[in-house]
Length: 196
Picture 1: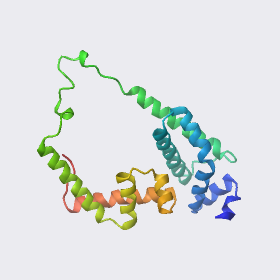
Picture 2: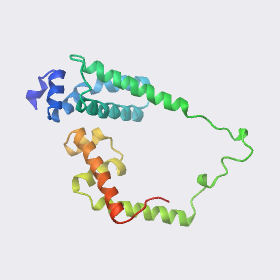
Picture 3: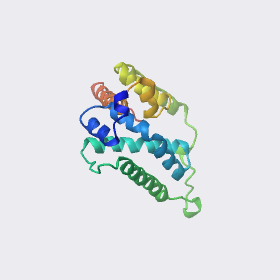
């Protein structure tokens, strides 16, 4: 790993594209502070900044693998532009979520069963669904089971999962993807439906 640290961003990008997944970890570590700080200054929310940071590097990884990076010598600028675009996308989505007022309608929007407490039957169905999901998770390979638990039960980011399990972010994302694919297959085989 120490020989990788002396490489330039461009050399690390080339090695990552050639299949050395450790290089993307080093790039993320090298530029974390600058990119995260930029995102945080724009959104002013720690959790949101972490989510956008993760989305940025997921997009970076996909773009590099798809051969969409061609800006020699400007890796950081390219990543910052991706971050900027994702921040803009976030604020656009927020702006498009309209507020609804009860005064504008002839019926009470908030007097809806979706907003009321669950009935005992609803709670039992919900508990049964959680139990079925937990049983599916138990059937997964250990590495996939671990990622599901860390992400959905403990709420860790993919960066934190990667650090916790000593793998690259790319590997953590891949394990999550395969876990979900495997769970869908098991549901189909068992003819299960996880909806209320």
